[in-house]
Length: 308
Image 1 (tube, helix red, strand yellow):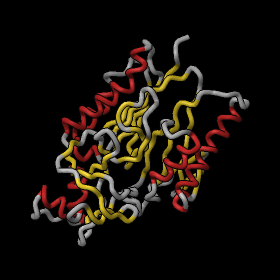
Image 2 (spheres, one colour):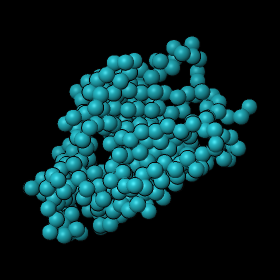
Image 3 (cartoon, one colour):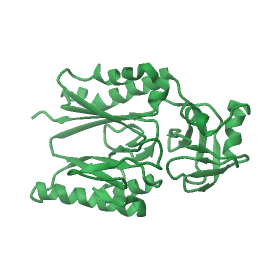
């Protein structure tokens, strides 16, 4: 566990990664072991989540798979504590490194929100505040598609921002979800992590059908390497965005069942909800994709041992 992350998330990422490697080295008597996956969970006490990832990736590798998320109560103003060895902290991250020559890992990560608006380039940002787009403010961008009759007050904005979040272009026409936290009267929008200028942004839309299809796809992708090798995973970990419950409602168990129905009978399944996710987007079964910080995702990790 690394504390005081908000002081410098990038350095905290370095410290966490080196701590994981040191722990692995001590447990294997410094014998070289193939590293497969890092699980990382942190309190929502800092906005520069991508900097934490960057620090870890500089140590573990840019394309080394990092999965996890951040937890909080209702906002970053009240972050929940994460614990390690019975010690808790509201400004920390905890990591687990999985390694082993016979270890198999399959990953799937999708969200299900689909593009609604035309893309706009982000012109001006201040950390996690999106201030200007190409030719209009972010708030006017919402009004253009959803109508000026909307009252984007604090009470209304949560549901609107979840059903119609922002999509930040990553690569290959893929969009990472960012839920607006606050719509400011001046036209700016605040999200929960830093955003970069000159990225393309789009208004997205979420439906039950598409979100459940994303869960189904994530399960298929994670289990693919096990089906190819005719091996059953021992464990499946599900990390799902708590905001998905807002759209799925009573169908929330359908998302879990989408994974359970595809898993072998004796495979153990555990999971949790987070307010943000560390994960690649799409297929990472071959462990070649870059991990990002995102909102709204469902991440499925299948873990097992190769057959002798």
